[in-house]
Length: 387
Image 1 (tube, rainbow, N blue to C red):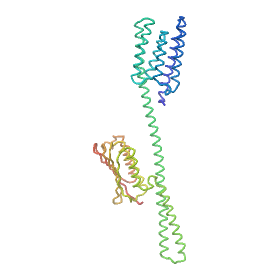
Image 2: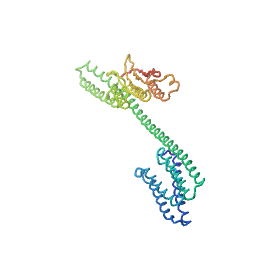
Image 3: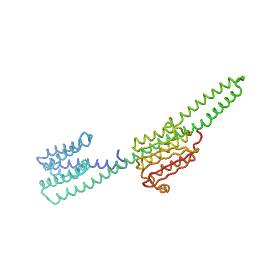
Image 4: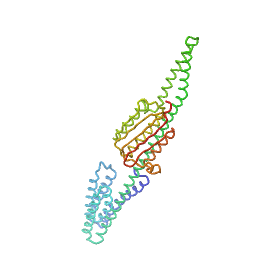
């Protein structure tokens, strides 16, 4: 699909070329009948064949009609027409544009030069050689080459613009899908936290109180009812925890450590970057913290893949004194963090700002250590919180 703003230009040029070619084909035939040349009927037949072959090449799919064969057939018919009627030499002008448009690379220019020589020779043999008969085709050939090169540049620019527009549309769709996914994950995490902090905690407290009551009076008249209530609370608590697990992000279904290893394997398979993961297998974190750390790891590894030109990277998770630290280190080209913080390096700064914002929302801190040629270390520290 051509770029919308340039499509009328291309359509106008092509329609103009079609009209010019048909008009010049008619002009090549009419004088022969006016002057009653004996070759006029044959010139009419060749002109009709010429227009028919041209129309077939335009209308039929290009895969069914090879461009080189099509152009060769038109050139042969044109040469025969010029031999029968000298006015057919003027058809060389639309042929110039056809050569430049259809034949790749220098082939179009070579065809223009060859057809110019044929036109000059044909006019000279029919009407005698003159300065006008030589200069006219040469000037037309030069103008056609310049216009053809301009058309190629315009078409190339239109293709590049369309590619950019398509990429922007795809990026917008991906961003919209990501935002929807992030919104859904955030809402699921919020619901899980609310259920954990209210219903699950309440049922746990009820279960503990009933257990204490059962222990204080194990043979009392209401002991059986207390035991039944405790068992019911225990079953409800187990069911509530199952709901909480189902509300957790899908990538965390089998745990935070497994999600990080899966992230490393997926990125290694896609990009060839060797990523190692070091994290405690038993790391009890709230789902909000797990989700945030996983998203931070995804953003950091994505930055490494896109910008660091690194061969190796490491994801390290450490839990010390009630705090958890996620570090991503790579051996890539590095950058100047102060330059990025000052507004430079726009390619990387958006990802870093997103990571910093996510850490800040959870009361954490972001530290970036890097310098050109020395790799990068990104560390985010959060409070562990109550799982």
